[in-house]
Length: 454
Image (cartoon, rainbow, N blue to C red):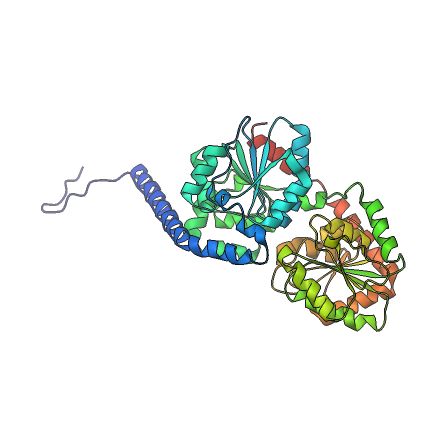
């Protein structure tokens, strides 16, 4: 054994286990500081968020209601601990309806609470479930708001629909041993890049999630690259393929078709955003010279735009009817505004050609499977990153057509009007595409039940 040289500094040895322990606590400290910084920024932004809510309330008064819930001041829960399902807005709410219905049917003794962030999501929950589930707005991602919410609700598990990930929400659940699952999860390359830029915040958040059920393997790989453990990942497919048609849809469709004339070609622009309605009205104007009995249905995505779209149609010179006024679109109605909640599947069923909105603008598109399950030909713009895998698959199966702009959309609509047999074939392929991809619902239901202890 060699002695250290005379005068050499004596350095205490550090074992690998000590190094590992030091790194563990260092990472923990960094994660805590990162989340603290995020929380401070969120607190500073809260007045701006509330101001934005108040301003949105000018067009949609519901945004000015129930603010206390957004700070965790919900009613104290009585009885059995509920399953908490968070569906941020309308699209996620619609997607999770079949799963919630199964839970209520198979476990009527286990209550369900659904949270959302928007009045449209809230309205859809009420319309679908009534008093069978409890609804409240999700608390902001602030520790005190989440603490109040958890004290009052005490959920047995938290189920997040798609990708609404909040660091403090997930950390709050982890602290209270509440399992967190993300179902029907999707993560576009654009979103993954965004999370990657704040990896100091997103990585520990993902590590606190119990399980993620993704729609496809590409999305799963992105989650793993961001820090999710591979053992926590399941590729189940999209629950949106397990869509069903309301039982009374056919009867209500027939009523509408008889009111406006069964032989009329009908184009619907659904879930449209600002600027898309105007483009569709321009397309309608151009097509009227060739198809003067064409009916256009417009269904804006957000209720605060209902009146605005109606005014646009009237100013364009068209005889316009509003569904909210109980006006059946008779034979002389040219533009029909679908300005009620929960009727989109009915209006899809009564149309011949469907354009799904949010895709002619940089919005990412909306769900093309809803009209496809009704065997309708589907058209979308080029911006569909929210449904990239689904749209690409449907295009490959010739069940959907994408267009670059309004000129291409006009040509595609005219083509389908001229060749109804082509429209019917496209619609049938869409329905077949859905039937071939069902099954995600059962897998995700079992995951939710397992993590909820039922």
